[in-house]
Amino acid sequence: MRFIHQILRATPLDKQFDFRACFKSTAFRLPGKVVAKPYPWKVHIRFLLRMTLLIWSIPFRMKRARSAKAIVYNVADNSTLRRYYYQKYQNPTLKDAEVLTLHHNQPLDKLYFQRLGFTQIVRLLRAAWILWRGTFRSAFWRTRVNPHWKIRFGNLLLQQVLWHGDGRDQLFYFCYEPETYLSTLVASAILPDYFPKIVTSNSLLFSDNRYLYNPKADLKICSKVQVAETEAYRKHGWMQVRSVELWGLEEAIVYDNLTPTPPIYDIGIYSSGGWARTHDLWRASDLTILRKGGYLDNPLYLQLGVILEVVCALKREYPQLQVGFYMHPHELNLYHKHGIQPPYLPLLEANGIHYALESQNSQASIYEPKLAVAVSSTILFDRLHLGLQSFFYAGKAVPKVLTDVRYIGEMAKLGYYDGTELREMMLRELDLPEKAG
Image (cartoon, rainbow, N blue to C red; front, side, top):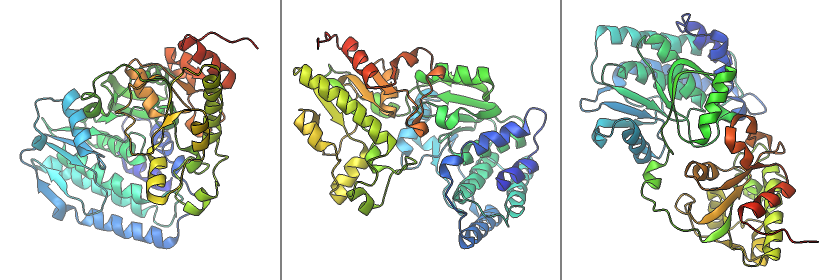
C-alpha cells in the first residue's frame, strides 16, 4: 500500500482527479492476491534490484516501430485473439503488422516509440522519476502481495508515455489487475490529451471492477449483461470514467466463426472445478491434497452439488431429458496430466448425464444446451449476451463469486438462491409439468 501511496503522491493529480478515489480503485484490486505473511526480504530485495534495472535501462530498451499505429497491451498468450478484437471494434482497416501486441512482463522488455521529441523525453523522465520515488520511498516496507505486479506497472507506464501521440492508439486488457488501472491512471495525469481505452472482460464486474475511477478513461464493456451493471455503478459513484461503450464478447475471433446450431441437450451444466480449488477459489496445485479430496468442502463445489441434486432428480422424473456436463479446463488438465478424476463422475454415469474427458472448448459448444446452469461461469454470461437462456447462483454462500443481482437489471430474474427455486425455474423454462407427490 505504501508503494501505491508514494506513486500517487508523486503523480501530478490536478483537480480532475480525486486522490482518495484513485487509491481506493487501486487497493480494491489487491485483496485476492494477499498472502498470509509478508514476502521474505530476499524477494523484496530482488524486486528492488529489478526495478532499478528497469528504470536505468530505459535508453537501451527503446526501439522505433515505424509501421505500427496501435498497441494492444496485456495479451498474455492470446495475441491473435486480442488483436482481432481491437481491429474488429476499433479499427478494421489496420493490418496485423500495424498493431503491436505486448505483455511487458520482464524488466528488460522492449519499449517502442514512433517519434521522439523534447516534450516526449520530458514526460518520459517524469514517469521514470515517479517510478523511482515510489520504489525507493517504500524500500523498507515488505509486502504481502507479490511485488512482480510493480514491474509490469513500471513498463506499462513508460510504454504509454513513450507511445502517446496523434494517430497512435492504445488498448488495455486485464482491467481487474492493479498494474493496468494504476498505469493508465498515472499516464492520464502526465499526458493532458491522453484517454486510455480499457476492456473489461466478459464476466460480471462486481467482484473485480466495480470501483474504477479515471475520469479520462474510455471503458469498453464486452457483454450486454454489463450494460445495466456499469449504469448502476456510475449512478452510485463507484465507477467514474469518461465513457462506457458496449463492444462485444472478448473472444470475437471464436464466436464469429461459430454457426448457431439447434441444441442437442435440454440442460447443460458448466463446472467451475470447485473441488480442485483452494478455499479462496484459486486453482489448487497440491496433487496430494487433491487426491485425498482435501477441497471437497469448497463452497463452490458444494453449490455445484445442489445443481447436480436438482438435475439428477429431474432426470429420474423425466427420463426423456438429455443433459450434458461441461468440465472446467483445470479439471481436464488434472485428469490428463495427473490421472485425477473429478469426484462427481460416478453420479453423472449413474444418472445418464453425458460428459467428455477429452479436451473440449466450452465456447465451441456454446449452442449445444437449450438451457445452461452453473454456480458462476463466464460461459453463462457469454450465452446471455448471445440470447441463450442460462441460470446462475445468486446466493451468498460463495462470497468470492458473488453475483449481486441488485446491479444487473433484467438479468436478475435468471439468478436462483436454492435448489427449490432452481427446480421451479427449470420446469418453467423446459415446459415440464410438475408431478404430484
